[in-house]
Length: 425
Image 1: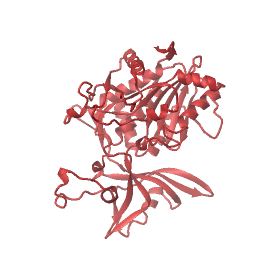
Image 2: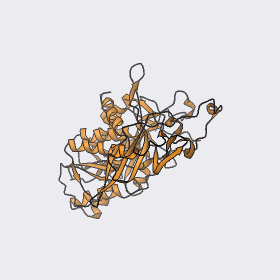
Image 3: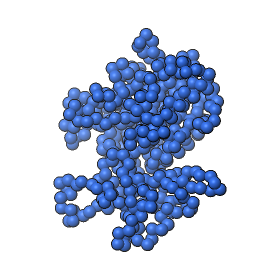
Image 4: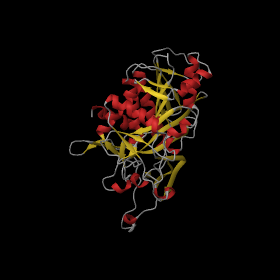
């Protein structure tokens, strides 16, 4: 559980995708990674460690031996469901000032009521003709108050939430709200913002032996932090090891910094060009590469075991989850599943399989979006959790350790495509 304890600080500090990006960059820089810019040439060398950022997304990579040029990629997402502030958000109701918000992602919105929420994200400022962004968080809390049961007698039989009416947080007394943005941004030079209402409670261990961890943004910052640690801990191997931390998965990945955009493809292509490989060599490298889409899976809920597949019960504490779906919601197939299982078995990493119930619509992950642009084999993996998309989610602490061990083993392995099959060394 040692790795899980260090995770809690990352979860606590990564209030939004912008905070997560900053924390990832800080860790990379501390470990000797060099920042590259998309506006400049990539100057790379074997044995080098680098990262590139676009918006709230970061792609980090290490360069191993290039005798057999290929990529090993673990991709995860830095965003989570939240309430996003509109511009001109203050709405006055009698003697109270509320904030006008819209929903970001598919959250369990009732779980955001009566919680300590912070306003966090980025503000955009202008100074001497320069426009730049700063990551910020409010020094104060706000709260979305519930309607009392005495005024909503049917609340425990079902509550349809109207986000324009029910999810507005209480900011202040009317007339005292004028400095709210200045208190967050530090001055009055803000010209725009991407600000969110996020659950600000600290992570906590629970269970008789502290075997579980509950926290905001478990989906998908556990994958982000675990992949980062694996990239730092891995052994030397052939090819280029990539950890992609991408934004906007919760709203479909269709952005320039999301998995459906060109960011990852462009970085991979520019790595190849930096070593003087042409398009033909790049496409050969993609065909020899392997992609892991890292996002969490639904654990069997002990209060509702009927929600899980009857013969593939994904359990808390059961190890890394390998996710499959006949309709293509996940990128795993029989061959890619076998490759992942082989890597894990060689490293002594515990794993289990996830399938949705056949009468339930599946969610999807960024892997499907990414591989529409990249011709390579891949699989969907993650850890099992409960309360996905709640303001506070939970998982088994031991599974995070297995995840880091599994991703470290993946990066440390040499995976080769040979005669229409794979060799794992």
